[in-house]
Length: 152
Ligand code: ATP
Ligand code: MN
Image: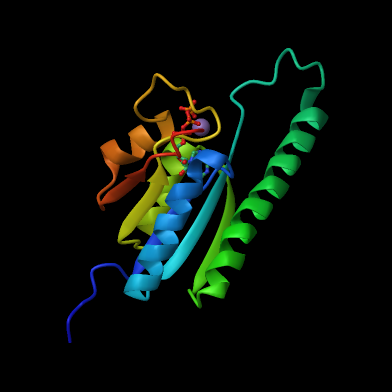
C-alpha cells in the first residue's frame, strides 16, 4: 500500500484574521489527504511584566485570558473541521510560539505545517512574521505559508 504523503497536518493559529486563509488551506489539505488535523495555539509567556504595576496576579490573569482565547480559536477551527468529517485534535500550550510549534511538530510526528505569513501583529513591511520565519528556517518537515487576504 502506498504511504500517503500527509497523514498529520499541523495548523498553528494565533486566532487572528491573518491566519484565516491558512486555516482554509489546512482544512482542505486534511480533507484531501484524509489526514488528522492538529490545531495548536501557544500562549506566549511575556518575557517581562515589570511596569505593568500588577505584579504576578496581573500576569496570571493575563495568561488565563490568553489561554481562554486559545481555546476559543482552536475550538472554532475544530468545529469547522467537524463539518467536513476531518479528524481533529486541539492543543493550547504555554511557552514560546517560536520554539514550541517546532517542538509540537516533532512530538506529534506531523508531516506538514500550514501557517499564515502574518499573524496578530501583521507588520506590513515584513515579508514573514517572526514566528513563521523561525519555523520555516528550522522545521524538518515542509512548511506551507499562506498569505493573508490582500485587504487585511
Ligand atoms: P510578529 O509576531 O513577528 O510581530 P505577526 O504576528 O504578523 O508578526 P507571526 O506571529 O509570525 O506574525 O504569525 C504568523 C503565523 O504564525 C500565524 O498566522 C500563525 O499561523 C502562527 N502563529 C503566530 N503566533 C502563534 C501562536 N501564539 N500560537 C500558534 N501559532 C502562532
Ligand atoms: Mn505574532
